[in-house]
Image (cartoon, rainbow over all chains, first blue to last red):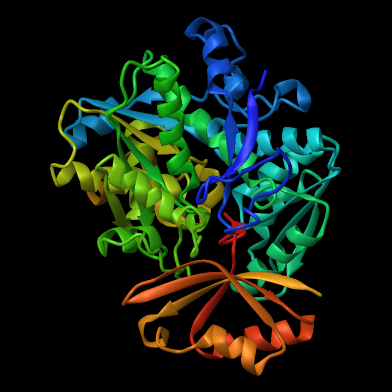
Length: 412
Length: 80
């Protein structure tokens, strides 16, 4: 059962009752979920977790809502794969890929949306909403369908048709907003403030973001109850990055991990790297940028958790890596060809950052490194269109041998 | 009276401009700063603006012409 105690302001610490609010009324700082850790300590154990469902709900004691409060889509407990082939290329003996593209709608967003949906049902909302250009839209639509909620998904009207099909299939109401990215942002922020809807990443944000902690829990459990030496995580708003760190620390504080000395490295694409910019300038001021990247799932120019992500990097002596745009697709291919994992562009960003850190000698050979792959490559086929180079042949043996020889000369 | 919560982000060249003071003087608005961080090279202010809807919009349009970025206080709401 959940042990949620209150909401509290991350800036001034003021406490609030548990309600669908996300901003401190006094300083306008973001609200965070507070738990009764003493009570959790008395009930949680490795055995209890291991005997739980093979999903994020095995960590229910550390989430702000119960599995029984709503629906269970089977999200989480995704594979942690030992990446020996890629590790060999990069000179890393203990490289792991946390493959979160195997979730119900093929991205890590199912973790946060599962928690937000159940909390929304507990609060009595009948409408689930979000503004999204991809993964979030699909996840919210699927959860809304399963929960029998009225579901509204907002997106910029110039979004490619293919991108909205992943939400349309679930029967959500799609709203195409005719405006610039900033205008869509402002409208949706206003809608969230003025409608009694569960806007998953606005008024439900304190609960929603807690779902990301389960990635930290899972990795530690799958490594045999130990924290990785290093995590490499893609960043959009920066929330996922900070919550993985929070998850590892909660496990430690509850006595489930002996120690946590994890270095947290953050990765962003060159075309949208406001957190890396601030890191490079040695400041906690995250200056908003206008995104222009092929990694659309990371295209957040004004990251809500940028400041907190920078604090996590500083606390863990981590790094922030800016990935050149051409390396995104290249590293999607590298991961696919070495480990058989087809990731979307955000995964390409992570693998490129991993490679860069390894090449620069920042990662030592025997470190236990976990690179987080957060979405499935089928979502971003357009960036690897040139990947297919078939052997063209007539339907006879001789033609095939000749065509293969030509192909081999060209490619090997 | 409608209230809007916004975040202004300033570039270095705008730090000396009394933007918020002008909002109260030249527009029929009441402003209330809740949190801010202003350094020598840039700054941001999170504030509440109270007034008629049209007047708030007129003021925010004017602020935008001053190369001050105006954002919702929650950061980007549109996610990937």
